Length: 330
Image (cartoon, rainbow, N blue to C red; front, side, top):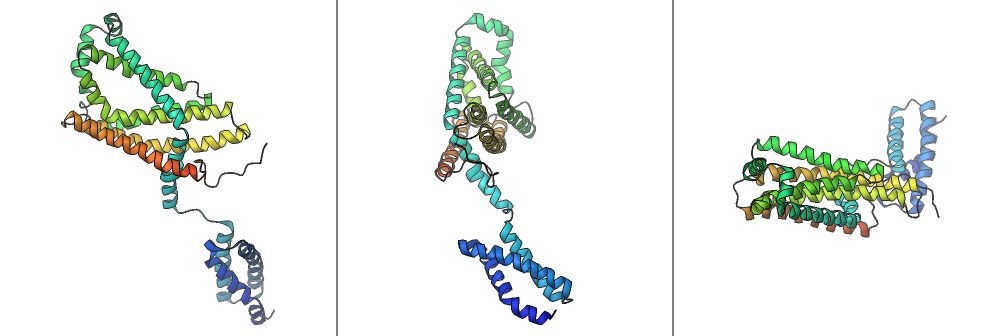
């Protein structure tokens, strides 16, 4: 084979392919088709050159061109920073935002349960006696409740709180595989514990101390737990009512989206743990500690509403950017 003649004939195709590869992000539909066609043709040229020529420079040039064209045709993984940004600006907030009514329902239900149980415990000495002896209640109210937040080094306490809260949130999401049925029970237990503690503190006139200690971290922490419960129950409901999609397709899509919340809450609960370890037991006045907790809570809700609403308007679901194709259904 006359390699010089071969190069002279096919060089325009190689140059055109190189131009298309350089403009890969702004090609028209016709140019994309041309890119695919040229990639296939130049791949054949490379095979011919390798078998009929010893020109290493030519082989190297065509090999590099084919490799770049393959990347343009088949696509490449997005850089890590882009995936990171997409997660925190799209995937996590849009799943939380789309579950907002489940989230609000879980929040109101738990607050109602905690309030009713707290009032019941605070106003009934017989109930208090059934919970613990008078000495134990006094110990709890005067010492144990406040000492809980300061008896361990801050770093150790923060990590323990973070792990515990992350596990509670993961639990309620995992329970979605049981159609979310156990989740209300988990929420009830947590609400009942808060209600009992608040009721006992209120019975001894220490309700201000109770709210002063639990509010700084509790606003963000409980909001995160309620969000985990909301997406878990919503995932369970998807099994019952998948809408116009096949049940398995709807469950797979929602399941992949819920993973975003599980990962995002790791960060949220980390912040909550830091507040509980560093702010709650600090010597700051109560208004300052509660203010810090309120600012963190309000910032989180603002973040979810802003980015979640924007992503939903762009028809994002929180699913994978390259989710598996689904067959159309009626």
